[in-house]
Image 1 (cartoon, rainbow, N blue to C red):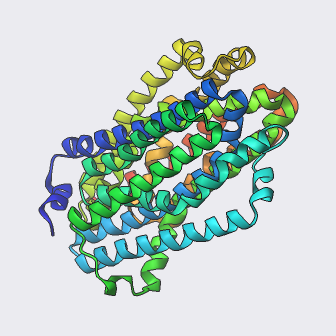
Image 2: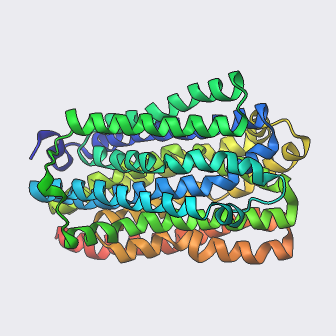
Amino acid sequence: MAESTEAFGTGDIRTLLLKQAVPASIGILFLTVNLLVDTILVGRWVGGNAIAALTVVTPVSFFIASLGLAIGVGGSSVLSRALGSGNREKAEKTVAHQLLLTFLLSSLIVIIGLVFSDGMLKLFGAQGSILESAKAFYFPILIAGPLQAIAAMASSVMRAEDKARLAMIALIVPSVMNLVFDVIFIKVLDWGVFGAAMATAISFAMGFLYVVWFFITKSEIRLSFKHFVPDFKLAGEISALSGTTLARQSVISVLSVLLNHVLYDHGGETSVTVYGIVSKMLMFALFPVNGITEGFQPIAGYNFGAKKYDRVQKVIKLSLLYACGFAIVIYGLILIFAEHIVSVFIKDADVLKETPNALRWVFAASPVIAVQLIGSAYFQAKGNALKSLLLTLTKQGFFLIPLILILPDKFGIFGVWVSFPIADTLAVCVTGSFLWLDVRHKLSQQNG
C-alpha cells in the first residue's frame, strides 16, 4: 500500500493526530468563518430580516452538504479499513461508489426541491416578510447543491488517503471565493440576499473544480469505468455507515425547521434572528473539537483494519484529552465575550439584548461534548453502523427535539435555550457509557 497511508499504522499517534486534526480544524475554521462573514455582511448590508431568511434556507443547503459529508465519512470508514488491510481493489471501488451515490442522491434532492419549492420554504419556516427574502436565496443554492455535495464527500476521501492538507484546501477554496463574491454581489452590485446566494453557489462550483483536480493529479486512488459498475453489497456497506452521519445531519435539519417554527411562535422574527446568530456560532466556535473528531476517524479506522487495537485505544484517549481541553477554553471565551461577539453580527437593539444569554446557555455543556462526538465516531470507524447511528441520534433526535417541544410551552424562549445543555449532558452520559464499556471489555480483550 502507498507509503503515506501506511504511516497510520506505524507512526507516532500524537503526531498523526495533530497532522490530521490541525488541517481539518483550519479547514472547518475557514468554512465556518465563511458562514459567519456571510451572516455578518447580510445582517449589516441588507438587514436583520435577511439573516432570518438565511436561517430558514440553511437547512436545505445543510442537508445537501450533509448528504455528501455522510457518504464521505461513512464510505471513508470502509476505505480506511480497506487501506489498512491492504485491499486496494476494494479501496478504489469504494471511492467510485462514493462519487456515484453522492451525485445521484444530491441530484434527486435538487429535483424534489425545485418541484416543491413553495411548500418546502413554508415548511422550513418562511413566514411573513421572511418568505420573499428566502426565495431569493433558495434557488441558486439548491441548483448548485450537487457540486457542494461532491466537494464535501471528497474531503473525507482526502483525509483517508492521509492528505489532510489537501482536504483543508478543499474547504478553504470555496470559503475564500465566497467572501470575494459576497463583496462584489452584495456591496458593489447591491444584489442583496440574492447576491449572497449567487456568491455561495459560485463558491460551490470552485470547490468542485478543486476536487476534480485532486482526483486527476493527486489521489493515490486510480479510478476506471470498471469501478463504477454497481456493487450492491459494497453500496450497502457504504450506505449503512453513511446513514450515521446523514441521520445526524438530517435530524439537525429537522431540528432547524422545528426551531424556526417554535421561535417564531414564541418570539417572532427577532427570536429567529437570534437563533440565526447562535447557530452560526455553534458551527464556528467548536471548530478545533470537530477537527479533532475528523482527524481521529481515519487513524482509528485504518488501525481497526490492520488489527492494531492498542493504537486505537491510544488515539481515543488523546482525542478526548485534546478535544475536551479546547472545548473548555472556548466556553470560557464565550462566557466572557458574548456581548462583543454578538455586536459583530448586527446592530439591532432587540437582537443585541437577547442573543448573549442565549449564546451562553446553548454552549453551557460544550466542555464535555467531545465524549459524544468521539464516541459515535469510534463506532463508525470500527464499522458498527447500528450502534453509531443510535448514539449519533442521542442528542438531537432522542433528547433535544422532545425538549424543544415541551420546555418552551412552560418557560417561553428560555425553554428553547436551556434545552441545548440538557440534551448535550444526557447524550454525553449515554455515549460515554457505551464507549467506556466497549473500550474496557471488547477492545482490551482483543489487545490481549
